[in-house]
Length: 307
Image (cartoon, rainbow, N blue to C red; front, top):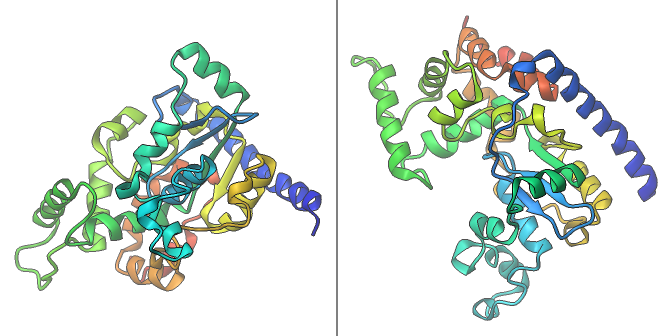
């Protein structure tokens, strides 16, 4: 397939995604509000490139991409003892001056509101999403199921104890030192049931805020929507139209390669522990994300064997 044919085919896909997003936003004018977003601003490019990172949706991968685009740590003397592949894995880590904070240091937002608005309108703006339930499962496995969650370990260890205390009956046979997936889902359902606004989510939730909250998708007009499920193709499309030569045909997928949270067998194993009622209530909490990006809860309801 020629590059032109590839781009034309992907433009059709992106048109479908952005049209669905726009039509869904029109149905929910209450969420079309401007809000603070922690964006990556690549203002050196023409057009500028703006990215809204979302936790547990390939954010580490894309942070590495942005460091590579800026040629950060192309030569690190301390790493010359390693082979080339190992150097590539290590040179973007915080210990060698990489990490998320380095990205925000390199790609600073414009200083004034006027300049921000000017750049934002000219920029190629993109977002990366995945199935909302797969993201919830990934958060659970990374922050709630682990005995030693990183980072923010004290916060999440305290939350683990609080969930067990509230949702695990004293006479239960369960002995797990961390909450089960069912206990965590009950916590998410109950703790967010009265949330109406983006401010409610931002004030009370750390890692599982909806996409519409975290990236203001109904007020930001993203032109490219990358989905984790088709990320290899989607990121190649973005790399070509934005001339991101440093990441073309790269497909690193850091923190996502062979991710167990993305396999159907793993999803089935965890969601089988939920009742259909739990799944439906969880869906209600994230329903707008489902509608905005064209996802369905049907497969996950089929995983459940309990009403």
